[in-house]
Length: 163
Image (cartoon, rainbow, N blue to C red; front, side, top):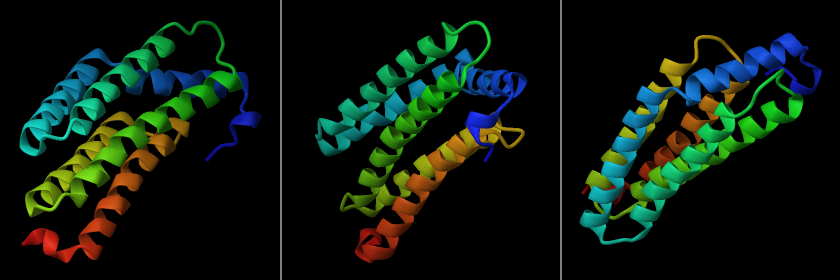
């Protein structure tokens, strides 16, 4: 990954534009939020665990503030803007990934399958957003790897989840 401290102004502008293009696309945001809110509510009905609603609506709020930040930045991109954007994106990925891993730990095997679907969804989002290696692409890779490794670990450690 390129060292963001040594990027030229042109490279910083390009990196920030990639974050903005990938994370502030309204149709993609609406689709992701509808899926996450729907899943959160369905999981709440299935488990009666309030954490499911906190996760879904927390994800929505984190993204609203993040997209607002992306859309209100103007002028040449600074190293600080790139770092804040990458950190915020990682935070959202961790929020999403933590719940995917938690869902995998629930006692019924169907939840493990649902968690695997969450990993696949993150992977498809990442693939659709990144056409080149950039800071944004590395953040998206992290967003897929964390829940994937977590779900795989749970599946390996709790084989009775399938039965």
